[in-house]
Length: 376
Image (cartoon, rainbow, N blue to C red):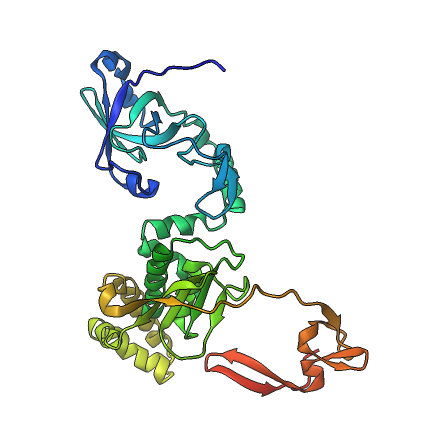
């Protein structure tokens, strides 16, 4: 193939001299320092609120043609934004803040300091005017990377917006949910492995209160995808581990409860009324919810090291979840997993129809019950 030679039109100027998270780099403003001989090319560039900056990955090397992206999925390099490419060329859309002589101050660039700038183009924003296309593109991304928004917030340590989203799962905001979000975000950034929903990452929670919903939401580990393990220990604690068993355990400190209690006296007063005493008059519930909302988001501002202790762990990991055959109960005729049946010669009865013991998990923990007559 023909050799193509590019001449840089300028250089990037920012504080990132070595490769780092593209999300971290984008948080800071960069300056596009354009060579004087290209000054005329900047005429009326202020008319372009968004620019496409073409630059060279001067600290990257050509790599393999496929690899893992942030979600853990494997993609070809042309289907990713990896800096290791056949040609080390990057394109990023940025917001133009202002022009100062031959310098363009921009927001959202993920280039390293001194990166050669190959070209600058006024961004074609016509697609932004077509909302349906935007929605279609957004949906397409979510279909292949359903947790991309959550993973980006984790990488940015944006606990505020993670808590906002976790409330959609939990149904209300409270300090317990906030502490779960704090602990899980810290653990995810330490482990640095994203959940693929296929048991590559396991969360072991030691309580079944609000804290655990924060853990489930941020880590992506749930009962449904067999990545959440529950230990009925009654501690505000959880362990996050990779499948090699190496992970970290985060536990609330003995002084954390008193710290939160002293910081939010109104919440404690109405927690006593509404939750402990079950005085659920509408006006009490309204005050309680407002106080819980305020306390939840302010909990994020408390000192993490005073709320939690952290230790590295080596955990025994269970095998991948088994796939069980389903059979039909001879009495109620409903489909049931074979291991949850009582065999009667060549036929099977479900636990309910057999009036056998089973385990139940509710707000009081795990206990045994004897199955009564089935609802069917």
